Amino acid sequence: MQASPRREVAVGGRRVKTIDIHAHCVIPEAQELLGIPTRDMRFGRGIDEVGAQRLQVMDEQGIDVEALSINPTWYRAERSIAERVVSIQNERLAEYCAANPDRFVAFASVALQFPELAAQQLVHAVKQLGLRGAAVGATVGEDEFANPKFHPFWEQAENLGVLIFVHPQGTPELSRRLGGNGWLVNTIGNPLDTTIALSHMIFEGTLDRFPGLKLCSAHGGGYLPSYAARSDYALRIHPEMDTGVRLQKAPTEYLREMYFDTLIFTSEALRHLAAEVGVNQLMLGTDHPYPWQPASVDHILQAEGFTDQERIAMLGGTAANLLGVS
Image 1 (cartoon, one colour):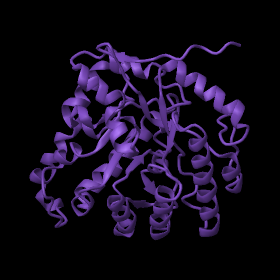
Image 2: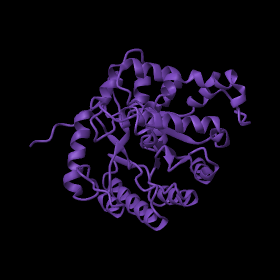
Image 3: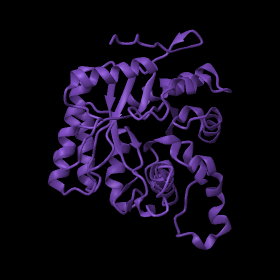
Image 4: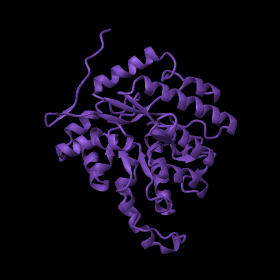
């Protein structure tokens, strides 16, 4: 089959480099160490075949660069296994990006169940392997990211000035209520997972402690930006729920310092998200290879109410600055 020609995206007659902040992959060798079958989403073996297929889809969609990330499946692994999994994944990602430097960058994997180890892994991945940040879940076991045990990792991420991509893992504690039709464990559970994680980081003062931390959340930040103002009123209505953490600003102000992908499906949703957090905080996200929104570029190009410069920022300008893509 003849490959489709590469789509080149332009805004106002200007060629734009598009960067997908939300693109999944797996490394089968690492998953096998965890006893996890890799099914069809293979990456890292048969690179010529699998890579060509991925590039073809990118070309069809008009994606110039993907920022690759691996969803955490190793947070419950013992230390030696977690170290090996992370090492394999980061090395393979670095190799693949080096072989395709104009098309791929990557987020490192880290073993967050061991926060100080994760901080060391992040340093190695960024300084030695050339990875651009790290991809994390939304919780680690039963521990929220706001738990002080994770401070060493957030401190290192802040010191390095790199982006941390937050991708949910669902809310298994709600499995009974999320059963039945509609794939609710993902449809509702994933955005809820992100919403809870970000809310804890705001209300427990984590973002005050690490004001330079750069977070990008998948799926437009879950539900939080859509109903953010309620957070500003919560402790005013029920001050007895205040645990003594004194925030430096209103909860909604922290949202304007975070980043979010644009995987939110409708023009009105995109307009509302931009109004809540600022258009310069938004970055193109496709969720590749999952076909949630295959016309992700057109989602941004066709949404009403944005200037050319704002569209350019969402399509790749903001991501280029954060990831060091020229």
